[in-house]
Length: 239
Image (cartoon, helix red, strand yellow):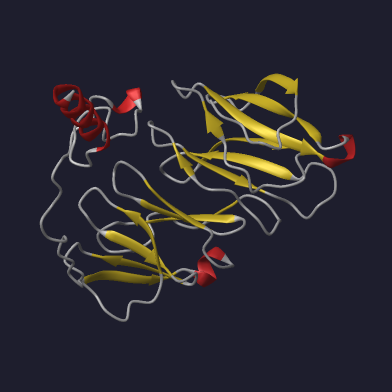
């Protein structure tokens, strides 16, 4: 009788022992049978203040570690140690506040407003194009996209009736490669590319069509439409 009592006590202890192992300590969850404890760091990572009283928001980090910031009127480049490399006032050139900043593989800094685009030298902050590229008359633009071949894609809106959006492909030297005009009504969307960058997808929302719309596929080489597919694009487009 005593041996039966001790056997029952041992089984009870193994099941409810908080120091047990395997499935017992995991609440009988078979999916965690092989979970083991991993020790974490013994100390918190150290942080270092590299710059103080900096005006602007961090937008991009270059390959060399440079930090590109903007406050909407100026673009600021900080070295990775926090020292100021250059500061450029772009408000007048862009005819408006900064909307987006993009970096090319060459390091060139592209800065856009609602309807203008400029290029800045990464070392000096000076403009590398003779003048800004003006694309449309609206008050909104989408995020900049820089292709692997260096082409910059700039999506803008218009205040004029009729065709309102415009996607402009710009060569690295600031000349226009091609332009596409559509009827999305807005120019704040980001162009989406397929994996080999041969086709560009633009979503065009049509509120008058009950919230539906269509996706337009453009040739990245020419900007010409290759297809149009009616669909509900309110949830975004992915490729």
